[in-house]
Image (cartoon, rainbow, N blue to C red):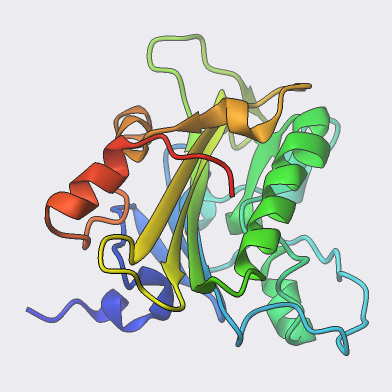
Length: 242
């Protein structure tokens, strides 16, 4: 059976399950009807998607509902207004400046999760910057990322707005990098992070986790098209910052 989503470059190494798949020009979202936000979002960063200096327009900031999501499962601008939470991007706008429409798509609410301001504007931003640095290294040809919210099972749930957008306890991001000149034993490199949705003064390396641990915590299969013993070992290693 042919898996149509596998035709998208972002999904080359796997695509987790979700209630609704949303295909945008340069990223893919797996949307959760229950949580009223992305379950995950994935992208690839390569020469065709990296930020270009000649694209000097400012980020568009045109936050809006995603009309592809059934209305009863949608989040709205009103849900976030006065909540004390940022509309936190999963796929950031800074690297999506190939055109105004590409940048605009990152402001769909289907790409947003409730994030505490001191999380969104500090450690989450630092992680986005770190991935950008990795993608610009000559050692790597392509960098894939998947990220999403995390929820504590059994804890009291906090939700915002009349649509009850559930506030995540934390967020994960897994980064898979393909080397430009593959080595026999190390064609791919992998790093995964789990960060609480709160202010922190700790460094990014403090939040590194084995990808297998992230899968159990998130209830998702990540990079599930990787096969073999080497791939299994990649998922069980914590890894070191680049």
